[in-house]
Image (cartoon, rainbow, N blue to C red; front, side):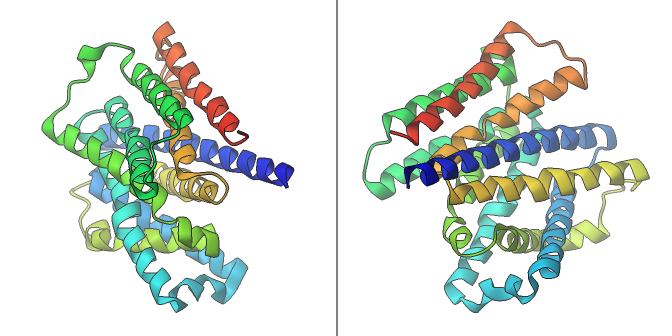
Amino acid sequence: MQTTTNNHSAKGIFYVVLGAILWGVSGTIAQYVFTTYHASPVWVVGVRLFFAGSFLIIWSLITDGAKVLQIFKNRHDTIILILFGLLGMMPSQLCYFSAVNYSNAPTATVLQNLGPLFIIIYVAIISSKLPRRIDTISIVIALLGTFMLATNGHFDQLALTPRGLFWGVMAGVATAVYTLMPRHLLRKYDARFVIGWAMLIGGLPFLYNTFTNTGGLPLTPDLLFWVAIIVVVGTVFTYYFYLSSLKYISATTTGMLGAFEPLTATILAVTVLGTPLTSVELIGGALILLTTFIQALGTKY
C-alpha cells in the first residue's frame, strides 16, 4: 500500500512539473506573439480556449464515444463544470496574459506564483488548521526563487503599472481557483473531458471576438503557426498534465511545483534568446528545484 501511494505521489509530481514546463514554453511564445504581432490577450486567450477545448473533446469522442457527455447527466457536476470554466479556466489564462501585456513576463510570473499563498490560506480556513510547516517553508522558498529568477535580485526593477499589478494579483487568485475547483470532477471523470468542456465553456464569452474581431491583426502563416503551438503544446497538454496531477497529490503541492514555469522561461531565454544567466538566477533556479525535494519528502512523512 505504501509503495502504491509513493508511486502515485511520484506520478503527480511528474505531471505537474511537466505541465509547468510546457506552460513556461507557452508563456514565452505568447510574449513573442504579443511583442512581434501586437496581438490582443483577449484574442489569444479566446483562440486558445476554443480550439484547445475542441481538440480535447474531439479526441475524447474518438477514443471514448458518448462517455464524454456523462458529466452533463449529473446536475451538480454540470454546475461545478460551468463554474470551473468561467471562474477557473478562463480567468487563469486571461489574467496571466493580460499581466504579461501590461507589464512583462517576469513580473507576471512572480505575481502568478502568489497562487500557492491563496491555496494555503483557503485550505487552512476550510480545515480550521494552521498550514503545515513544510508547506510554509516550501512556499517561501518557491516565491524567493521565483523572484530571483524573474528580477535578478534587484528589488527596484519590479515596477508595476496599476493594470499590471491588478492583473498579476488576479492571476495568482485564478491559479488557486483552477487548482482547487476541479478536484471533485477529476476524481470522477477523465481529465480530458473536464478540461475540454471547461475550455469551451470558458471561451464562450470571447467567441464573437475570436472569429469576428482580430483588431486589425493580419493572420499570416507564421502567426497562425505560433498560435497553433500555443494551443496544442501550451494549452492542451499543459492543462491536461497539470490538472491530472491533482488526482495524485495535494493542491498545495501542485501549486508549489508550478514554480517550474519561471525556471523554464529562464532556460529558454538563455538558450533561444541568448540572455546570459547570472549567479542570482542560478540560485533562484536551485531554490525552485529544492521545493521538489521538500514536497517529495512531505509525501512520505
